[in-house]
Image (cartoon, rainbow, N blue to C red; front, side, top):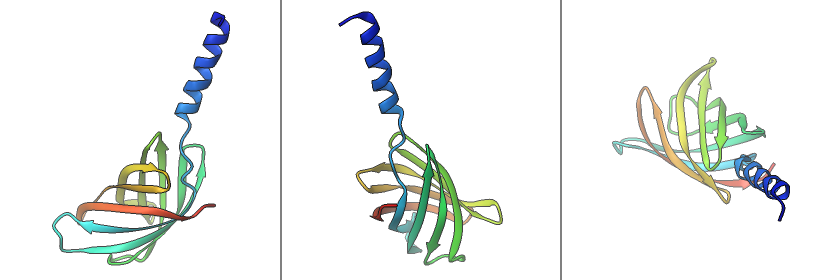
Length: 122
């Protein structure tokens, strides 16, 4: 293999590895507070452009029932915020693989764990 072909192959492999996974679609999941006092379910409808994600979330067990989400996917890592009035009221961080995602959430009222699965692709 020539040096030029080797460099081209390496560049293509790096580009493929850097590509954000497809997370667009509808996801359903559950959340549990760290102290065990609260839990609920959520459904989030995600659109994706490159590594940027946005959409709407419907949540049970909280003081709000619906909000906007905005975030980013970087490799297997996903990070998004739940926005009310343009302000992030919760942040979710975790990993995504094969239509499943899980991690931790944080907000002014506390933190906990969440897990979701994609129930409908875009």
